[in-house]
Image (tube, rainbow, N blue to C red; front, side, top):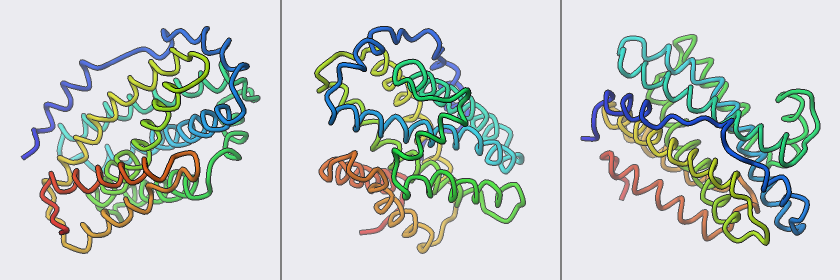
Length: 254
C-alpha cells in the first residue's frame, strides 16, 4: 500500500518554491540564438505546458470539492492546485519574458500558443479535463474516474513525456538556458508527488476491470498527443512507465 495522504500534504509543504526568483536573463539572451529546429521544439513544448498547466490549475478546484468527505485528501488536492498555479505562472514568465509571445495577459498569449500544439493535446486539456471537472462539480462523475484521467493520464503520461522531452532538449541546445532548465526540474519534482498521490487514490478505490483497462488504453493513446515534438522512442518509454505505474498500484493487465 502506497503511503497515506498525510505524507503527501507534508511533502507538498516541504517542496515549495518561488517562480519569480528564477533568473531568466541568460535564457533571454540565448533565445535569439537558437537554431530553427531548436526554436520549434522548445516553443512547442513550452506552449503545451502553458495550456496544460493553466487548465489543470483552473479545474483542480472541482477535485477538492469532490473529496470533501475526506479532509486530508481535500487538503492534498488544495496543495496540488497551489503547485499547478505556480507552474502556470512560471511557464507564462518564460513565454512572455524569454520568448516574447505577444499579449497583454495570459489569455491573450494562450491564443497565440494554441497554434503551436496538436489538436489532440488541446482536446485533452481544454475539452476532456473541463468536462470531467464539471461532472465532479455536478456530482455526475466519480472522483476516481477523474483521478484516472488527470493524475494517471494527463500528468503521468502526457505532461511527464513533455517534461522529459524538454529537459533532454535543453541539455542538447547549442546555447545555455539555465533558468528554463531550473524551473522545469522543479516542476518535474512537484509532478512526481502529484502522480504518487493520484496512484494512492487509485489504489484505494474498488475499480472494475473495464475502468482499469480504460486507464491503460487511454494512457497509451495520450502519449502521442505531443505529435512530432517527442520522438517515438521517448513515447514508448513513457508508455512503459505508465504500465509499470499501474502495476505498482495493483492493476493487473498482463
